[in-house]
Image (cartoon, rainbow, N blue to C red; front, side, top):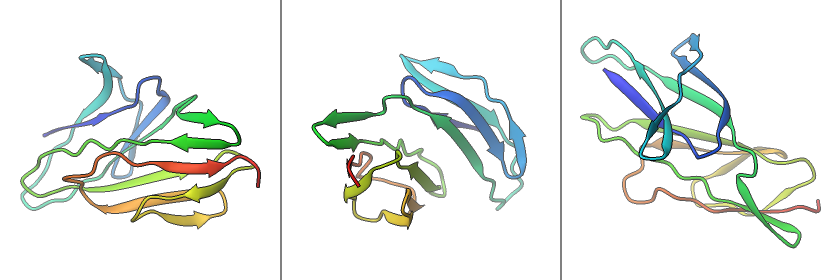
Length: 132
């Protein structure tokens, strides 16, 4: 089965992992939207994990002393819904002002969301203060 992961425009330093196997993905284009795809064999009832990490320079809007980051998550229709995990590493000197429902602080510099695949809400808004 091929599993695709769409990336934000401008993503760089893209790395991938299937279970414990690291790979350097080839970034493809789908109507102007970059993505990586990996073909992964599945046995019946087997669970596999595709993880993709990347940097997104200028991924947020700055207004005054606040920075707003709007991550999008594109769910994939599968017979059994996939789970997602998103980790956001905050820039040095920032603090969370507004965090979406379902997100948690892992430490002073990291917030995350994990759980079942999204169906209705695909975009989030994280607001940070640039003066801690």
